[in-house]
Image 1 (cartoon, rainbow, N blue to C red):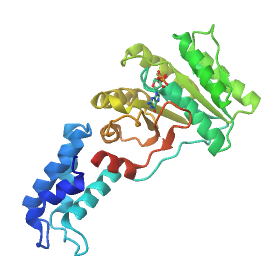
Image 2 (cartoon, rainbow, N blue to C red; image 1 turned 45 degrees about the horizontal axis):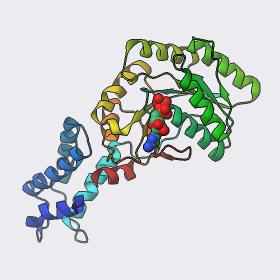
Image 3 (tube, rainbow, N blue to C red; image 1 turned 120 degrees about the vertical axis):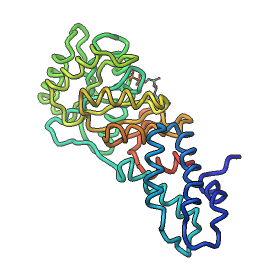
Image 4 (cartoon, helix red, strand yellow; image 1 turned 135 degrees about the vertical axis):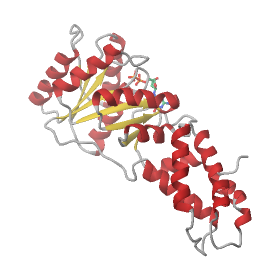
Length: 295
Ligand code: GDP
């Protein structure tokens, strides 16, 4: 069995027992363990290094509270700092428009369509909203079918226009349809590709400009680790999105992508996906993620 971080830090700090302060040598030892834990969780190397430097500054010279073991103090310091780095608190989505328009972005396979359905279901049941789902992938008929299946499953109407090859026109028509029929949230599922390319970026930028959504969300597969950071950066450069959705956290990833993405694009992670089913959605809690990353 692996030691958890607390046990590891206990070992690293054994020299310290009986001393009243955390010394530089002890801190260096323990921070090595912290950095290892972060790298194991797939956090970007540079970010892990910066993080441990920040913790080091804070730890040095701090009096060890008599009621706490030094290792516990270190674990608390690391967890608090990690939580802060991921945004501290939970973040909601902007539902102020009439209707509120939410644009989903991300690569193919990231979980956009699944999450669009989950979000519609969540808003419908938890926030008593009337959402409309919009299929805007004009390249893959199967993607339109998939959204219709999802819509049927959760009892939410899906707007699509199979003959139309212009996603901007589809989005605008969908919003008009929502206004005319009393939908107060419009969730637009867009086309994704397997890698970032210019055509996809131009297309989503055009939709974004034309409809001026209240909320633009970037969906990313947490299993993609380091690649997630580059993808997030590419989409943020074009869309200046409002929040991140981290999917597939039911897998065995520790979720280090959460820290890397937040550090690089500085946008809040708003929701997580924890399975294929429509109710496998949760608000993102930075403190819970910190615990998961540290193990
Ligand atoms: P899109 O191409 O971005 O629209 O991605 P999809 O929504 O089609 O999802 C791609 C695959 O990932 C599908 O097989 C989904 O069932 C699956 N998927 C999506 N979200 C999750 C999740 O949170 N956990 C798991 N295990 N699978 C997911």
